[in-house]
Amino acid sequence: MPTGKTEIEDTMISRAIVDTYHKKLLSDMELDVAIAGGGPAGLMAAFELARFGRKVALFEQKLSIGGGMWGGGIGYNVIVLQESGRAILEELGIRTEEYAPGYYTASSIETVASLALSAVKAGASIYNLLSVEDVMVSDGRISGVVVNWSAFKIARLHVDPIAIKAQYVIEATGHPLEVLNKVVEKCEVKLATPSGAIEGERSMNADLGESAIMRNTVEIAPGLFVVGMAGNAAMGAHRMGPIFGGMLLSGQKAARAIDKLLS
Image (cartoon, rainbow, N blue to C red; front, side):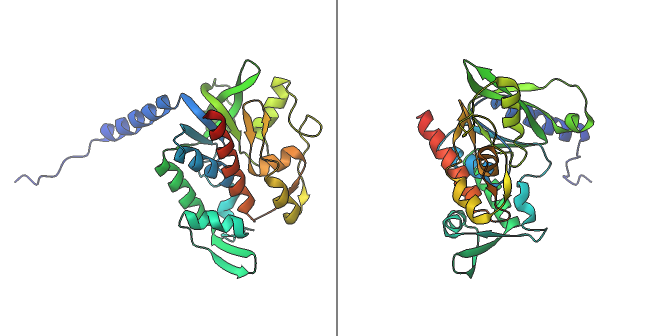
């Protein structure tokens, strides 16, 4: 007797994945903002921009997003925030706990998952396993990103990438400055830094690093913003370790600045 059960077709599963992904990627060939790096600053920028109605896509070269936030400090999945950072998490419904006056803790797992979910629900596209290997340049400004599968990069295969147009690009790759290094190498551009070049990251000082991160969130080259640890590394400021309020505030600041420029 018929059971009413529909037989699962293997190729239909494959078609659904390929077709859906291709439609999404094709729809993101022209963006308001492209973000390189899926750490906390990049995710926060994606959320804010999408919430403002901007067409934004984030490209993360690794399988998982979240950057260093996933592991908290030394793999203990707890992060620390100051009051201003805690306010952002509470707005997103992420639980925090006061540890001492001015110090708040949160689950790194809950925070990354909530940031990603908030960004996607707001309308941002998130692509993992895609590396931003170069930028597009037009009329003396950064005009998009050049992306390729991370597997090709890891395997050192010479396979040509694809180009994605964007009115603004956000460098959110953190310590390595993977996008900004390419800009300096290829574009012969003077950066908005004290020397006009990449200043380099300084050693740990959480207080100085956190206090610098907002002023280092700038349009460092025409069409290119730096956020989070990328901003501090570009400007010669200190790293700050597993305190993440500045990262979130930096992503928020860049998103609001770009939204204003696009208006």
